[in-house]
Length: 321
Image (cartoon, rainbow, N blue to C red; front, side):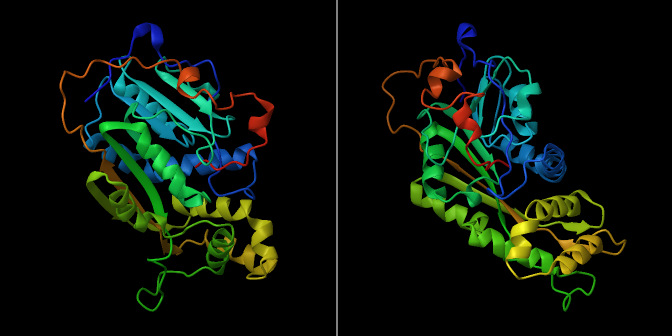
């Protein structure tokens, strides 16, 4: 299953690429913290993301949709994997960091999956990581992604379940239950984030009508001064003000927990990462061979989205990973 890409109709790379903070409007926009967040997310999860995408059979010539391209590591891998015969469209609402990417088969658009449509039945693969759980209208965004894949195409989604597996010192005395993590979770929940969404995804895909649904959940141990604890620290720092305003933790307790994470013996279980995949049903009857579909320029694929540099795009709240 693949799409032949006309050499004269390759996805444009004239616009900037996106990056965004998928933890809501209160997350800071400081570039250094954002770089740290995406670097640690890449170190923690890129290997398993690539494994799951590979298992879906991705090959040269595929056309792929990356919603919430984050730091660009997965979009870059997709571009290399599908080659010049294929194409990758990466979307998000913040176009700050990925402008350095240069792939002939990459198109990037400033696009809000919460409110804006996608080209339907155009992609062999659609992927998002840590996107939907943070959206107020996540069900509509999910359906848009599903509609974007072709018959026989795959969707791969990765989302946290951050409530089913928590530190429990009564079971393992080495595990630390942080007050700051509890406050962090409560603040996110108050903003409409669904901290269980990863666990719900298999049923969601079944209800939509996808087939060959599968899922895998993983938990790792986050130790002091690791990618996981650095991710936790930068995420809490970005939400420092609303966390303290919540009254669930004092500023002194906040600082104490941030230091505790760096102590040599610190350890905690990570959030549970659910990877869920499903396939659009194949066309029931095919009267003629499927002809190669030319993938138009990204401008034509997303005619209603804001282009990078559009002042309206800068007003959108960041929701990227």
